[in-house]
Length: 146
Image (tube, rainbow, N blue to C red):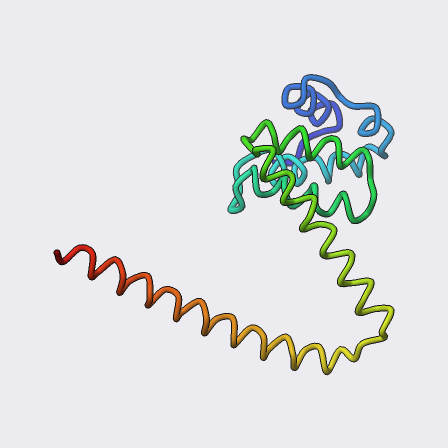
C-alpha cells in the first residue's frame, strides 16, 4: 500500500506515539519509501523474532559505535524480554567480531587462505555437533529403557 506523506506521518505517530524529529528531517519521498520497510522489519513480526533482531541490532550498533542505536536497541531488546545475562553476552560477542576483524586486517590475511580454513573449521565443527547429538540420543535412549 502506497501512502501519501501525510498518511505516512499519521502511521508513524500511530505506531511510535510521536513523529521523531530525525524522521521529519528526511525528504518526504525518503520517509514514504523507508517507513513501511522500517516498520515491517523492526516493529512488526518477521521471520527473525523481535528479541533476536534487537540483540543483533545492538551488536551492530556497538561495532559502528552509534550511541543512538545502542540506546534504542538496548531498550527494545529489554522490551522484548532480553535478560541482563543475554545483554552481557551480546556485549562480549560484539567485541569479538571487531577484535578478530582487526586481527585479520592487520595481518593482511589472505582471503583465499581464510576461505579454505573456514571451510575446514566448519566441516570439523559440524562433525563434532553431529557426534554430540548422537551421544545425547544414545544417553537419553538408554535412560528411557530402564
